[in-house]
Length: 114
View (cartoon, rainbow, N blue to C red):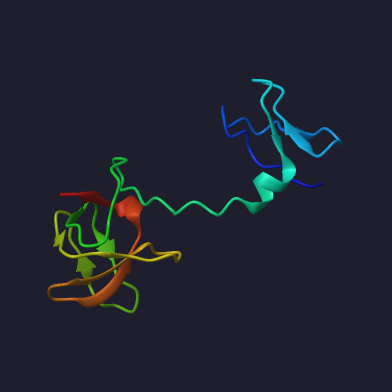
């Protein structure tokens, strides 16, 4: 089963192709050409913290829960401030250096923007 892009007007996932080179949204009746949808570039990924705030490179964040480090490296305590984060497209979204622990990767769901 092929998947069609969501409607650009209402973001409905129920779109379909009408057989004449257009996609159609049954919820808002919007139509748009197939070629335009295929040629559209991918939107840049938006990184959000646990509270839904948008994160950017260089932000300062605070850890919201104790995080055990793999390999017996200790625990990053709740409330630890992490300065100058770098966002990456990986399973862990943040690369950073934490005083006393060194370089590591964190998930955005465990931090909040300071």
